[in-house]
Length: 270
Length: 270
Image (cartoon, rainbow over all chains, first blue to last red; front, side, top):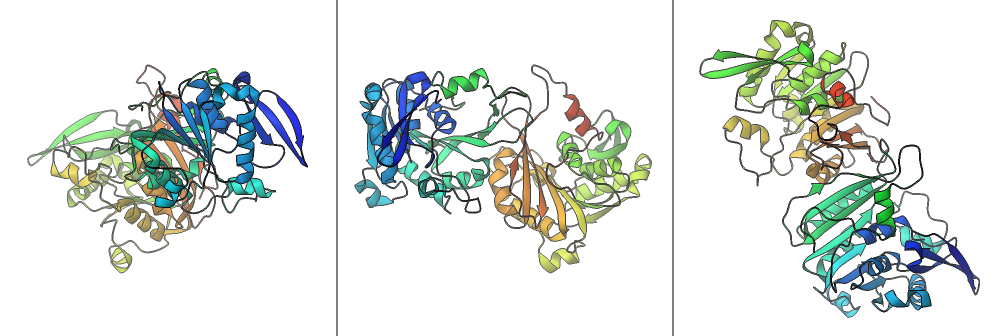
C-alpha cells in the first residue's frame, strides 16, 4: 500500500503523489478531499489471478489505483481505467503521465465514461460487449443515510444509489467475454444487492468477509463470479487483517496489499 | 447434542429416543427416514437469550428439538412447537409424553399448523398477532436442484420452495410482539432471500457464518433480527466448530450445542 507521500501544488488544489507496492507505482490524488485509494483498491487488484496478455477493465477507476495494481503484478496484463468524474479522470491522467509509472502506463488506457450507461450508449462510450477477461470494481458505498461526505468530490464517489450494483454488474456482464471473471470489493451489507444483481449473469460466486481481527465484525466483502457460470455460490474462509491486539498486517494480507500475491478463486479461474 | 440412543418399535416404524444436552431432554424420532435433529437445532436453540417467563415459538418444530432445547436452558420460558406434517406432529407428541421430559413438557405446547398460512387463516390455526417474545426457525433447505431426499417424509422437511423465507419470516413478523426477536439457522446461500424477506419487518440483523474449521468454507448461517428495528445489519465474527485437523468441538461451540450457553446478540436483546 501507500508508503510515502509527496505534495504538489496545482492551482489552489494540493495533490499528493503516493507510492504503492513499495514504489512499483505511484498515484496522483487530491489531498484532503475526494476518494483516496488505499487498501480496498489493493485487495481488489489482488483478485485478478491470470497469466498472459489478459484484458482487464477497472470500473470507477478513480485515479487508477486498483487497475495499476493489477498491471504491476501481472506483467502482460492490459488495463482499461473507466471513470466518470472529469476531476478524477484528470488525476488518472496525471498518474499515467508520471515518469515513474511509464512501464505500467504503457499497458494502461483511460476512458471517461459513466459505468451505468446501457446498450448502444455504453458501446458508443467505448465499452463494447464481450472484450474483457476480467472486470474489477469498487463501487461507491456510502448509504444515503450516512453522514454526507464533506465535499462534493468525495460525495460523488461515495453516494450509493438504489440500483447501483445492478447497473455496475450489468455493465460488467456485458463487457466481459463469456467465462470472464468479475471481482468486486464492497461493504458486507451490500451482499443481497450484489447477489440479486448477479442473478443469471454470473455464477460460481465466491464471497469472502474481511474482519479486522478474530472476534470482530466484518468491514468489507470480496466477491468474484464467472460470466455465464451456473456453479453454486461459496462462502469462503474469512480474511483477518491483523493479529489480536495489533494494527500490524498479517503476512498473507500484507502480500495481497503489496502486490506479492493474488487472492486465488477456489473455483475455475479465468 | 445427542449422546445415546434407544429404539422402540411402533408398528412397522422403528423410532429412536435420543438424549440431548446430556440427558436433560429426549427426542422421539423416526429412524433412518425423515429429518433428524442435531446440531442445527441446538445452535438455533442457543440463539434465545432472555430471562423470565418469555413466550417462544418454534416454527417448523419437527419432533421439537430446538424448542425443547430452549425450554431446558431457560427455566421460565414457555415454548410453542408449530409443525405442519402430521407425521412429525406425532413424533413431537411422543416426545412431549416421555416421562423424562415431564419438567420441560409442562412448559411446552404443540400446534399442528402450516407456518406459511396468511392473515385470518393463520390466526384461525392458532397463530395470532403480536404474542411471542422470540420466534426461532430452521426452515427446510434443500434446493429443488438437489438430489431428492430418498423418502417422502424427509422430502417434506427439506424441499425449498421459492418464497419460502418470505412466507416464514412474514409469519414470524406477524406473531412476534413489537421488539421481539427472530432467530434462524440456514444455509449461507440463502442470505439474499433472508435479507429481502426481512425487508422492513426486521432490523438490527446480525449474521454469523459457521465454518467447520479456520480456512474452510461456511456451511451454515445464523441470523437474528428485531421486529420493527431500524438498526443497521452487522456481519459478526464467524464461528469455527472444530480445531484444525480435528473433529472435536471447540469449547464455545460445545457449550452452545449442549445448552450451557446462549449465543448472545451484540445489539439489544429482547
